[in-house]
Length: 225
Image (cartoon, rainbow, N blue to C red):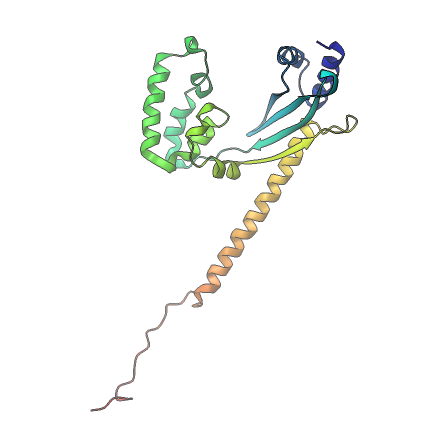
């Protein structure tokens, strides 16, 4: 392994927002000499979850470089009141552990409850999509969500940041602020569209909120006895 390359990568990643412990993951990944690999960093700020997927690629002289990262800001998933009870049950299961490979750490009771919940979700159909997204996103269970793209558009916003210049690196913290600003802008635009739609609907009625009066034909006019 090229020690200088690893030290440079570690410094670059720490500049983004990784902890110094990222060095061990770097060594493990580079040990197998892949053409490219990804590192994931997750930050939780209040109800927000920011996920950063960093792309590293092998270049000249088999040296690796940090090329770019995809930043995804996931806002709080609002669950309808009628799903609160099911939400509590879904939250009692560690879905990531259940879909992992460490089967020794899984409790039999959790498997039984998960099986029961899956049947309930299947019965509810698309009405339960918001719960699936809340607990299954970023797990192998994502493939079981038919409306995944629509749900991500509803609760997430993302951006790719390129790292061409080592002297001007956009950190994860800065990316989080940028995405939060974009999210607020998205909500403002959505609210304006909703308001415009309501106004157009009101004008389209053409009755000013009054009931239409039935036209009564006057007797004898235009009639032949």
